[in-house]
Amino acid sequence: MALPQRPAMTVDPTVDLGPISLSTPLVAASGTVGSVWEFAGLVDVSSYGALVAKSVSEEPWPGRPPPRLAPAGLGMLNRIGIQNPGIEAWQRETAPRLGRISAPVWGSAVGKEPAEFGRVAAGLEKAGVAAVEVNLSCPNLEDGRMFSLDPAATRDVVREVVAATSLPVGAKLTPNSEDIVAVAQAAIEAGASWLTLTNTVWGGGIDIETREPLVSGMVGGYSGPPIKPIAIRCVLEVARALPGVPILGCGGIVSGKDVVEYLLAGASAVAIGTIHFAEPRAASRILAELIEWCESRGVSRVSELTGGALQKAGSYA
Image 1 (tube, rainbow, N blue to C red):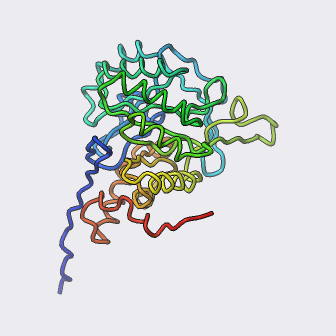
Image 2: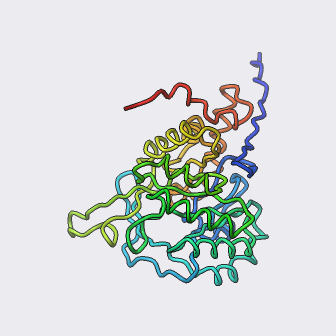
Image 3: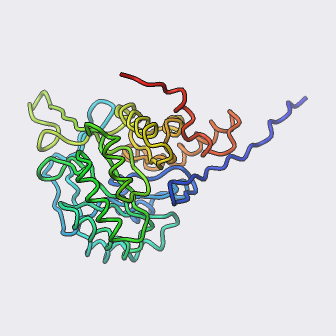
């Protein structure tokens, strides 16, 4: 006698990230999917709610000399330095291709001073992106500093970008900040629609045979599974201090359970990045794992998970 089948549960994967509605909670992180159109030519992008193109500056940036990428334990070091062709070339080469991509594409703006961020954001809007993420936190700029280490500098940049575009604007922050809540609050007060928490952690490594640094400049951005607890801590801190602020969790996501953890910590959606280098089609697997987890626990909407652990999180010294 056949066993009765469990009725199929339909899990609603849609979520809202501030003013933006996403078809799934998965966003492709900037810097891991190129200008998106190349990636979309090889991978089914239907598992993503949005994809973020690699950061663009006003003028072309050559990036750092090699070596730029290196494995480091379970994670990865990068010292790419935001190589990009500049916003005019990006508009010329990428804008005509955006309409052929079946998922929303967000632009990522970077610059050396607030006004440049604003001009790049205006150029990205002209190119046809659906939103602008402000890269305040790349540790590879020439002076080694980040705007997102300073609340006042963060406020100046975000305010400039918000004034320059009618699109939703997100602020991508760094886990290296001394007080990430203060920086997050400054970004929101300046008009950011959401916060991306977080970018890479400062890291370094040495090849013990050659006695040389793994990446040029010795220190780079460390990403991958080892940084997840650090990024989760940032999400928890900001979500508790600034209730209701939309958060895009980012750092070390490789499975559906990782997505659940970020959502419970207070994120509304998540960005997946480093896993793309090892598994370009990871998003479909991660989304399937998330849906399966929700079905097995009677969760009918993914959005129900957001903030589910905050009341139990307690406090720490």
